[in-house]
Length: 387
Length: 233
Image (cartoon, each protein chain N blue to C red):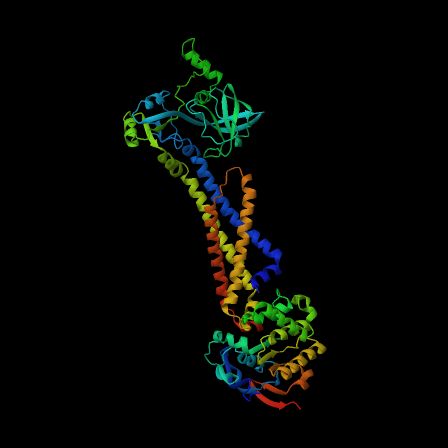
């Protein structure tokens, strides 16, 4: 007979509560790991999906994600002329507050070079990609917008033509894709007072537009994305462009490295530290649970020894009980994770490989806890039955 | 039946130090118990009865002297108690004042456990457990948990568990102390029956004078020594 199972079934409520306690700890580990994965995935989303070989950004800057960047509005034409360049696209990204039905919303406006790029690399959940006309937007569902919604950005009204899911920036703000020219206009939004001051400064010149500001204007193009000819040598192309002196050229790998090891480094470190801490706490709690369960059974263990049970019977009792707690806790944790984490504001990515590693860690924790219990049980003498 | 005693202790001594002085818990006890014999061990508290049971039951090592089971020297000073588990499992059944049943196992499982520990198949162990419980008038309580049994029923389950492996020796320490006179007598009659029917040597440590008529022999302990012995008429 399986003594561990018999004991467990004898006090099912207690076992369930214990398993839930372990499950919540394991769920916290799954959550922290998933949060880490989610932040990394979100941060790399654009870099990975936009399909660029090179990023031409402002000179001596590490833009556009790790640092601010602005290149000349016609930089794309300059880059296009470099030997080995297959095609170019302008890119920009900035945070934007806007209002829908009176309630404030927040999004990261991402300008893509329509019509060179119609946004087909965006995984649409609803609607369509860009059709080529202005004042169209593709929004992520996390912004709260729906396909067909109309929103005012700067002084223009945009129609949401498509909807994506899980397209957010490294801060978790939903992405709002618009054409690059629209994005430039939104970024150049100015107050009326600024425009009046600009007109005054221009000495009453007639052709001062709404885009003109009292402060110095800069290009709102953050980077030019380059796709290389298959036969091109990236090093030569990079060297050719960097000789201009006013740009820096980075590969997609360098962008990824900057994002993870510069911009997100502290956050990643903090999350991993917390994950480690929760694992240690889980180890301590599970060890204490198994040890306490062993202490409660010392009399029965002494009796088993009195009856002549081999050490393997006692080891099996403690080891199987630790395993039962671990397995139950792990299964409940996974179920709870699937149910609860989708409700979290940030994406929690549960990868099978992470679950496997957590299972391995929990196995080691349970084995360690069982070892502590078994070490205590091994000191029990059969004569303690009489005490 | 062989003439070799089931249990034989020779010059058994157990000394320990307490409060700076030497305590002679057992001081040179020699005793034989034959197959089929029901022996009662009487004596006041602190006379060495329980120490004797510990040593005879291979739960503790003697300071000096030997314990023999069926002519084989099994325990002595410095013997490895852990290595004696198998001997205990095969040759000795224990019954104590408290039934010491495992609370999360039913009556029949408590009995069958002794057999499963000895590698008997679970189904066979359970079937034998039911037979033993039936023999002790507990067939209707076989599936009950210990908490649902009366004190007398629990003690009978403990007896059934002690009998499960058909050991040649049963050691009982105050088995009737927690029972009323009727239940206590019942348990002692079971021991009597076991000794007679199975040829089991039964050694009962007791304070209870109500069942002395059932013993073949009574041994008195005092100050760690055997001070008198008499054969029951």
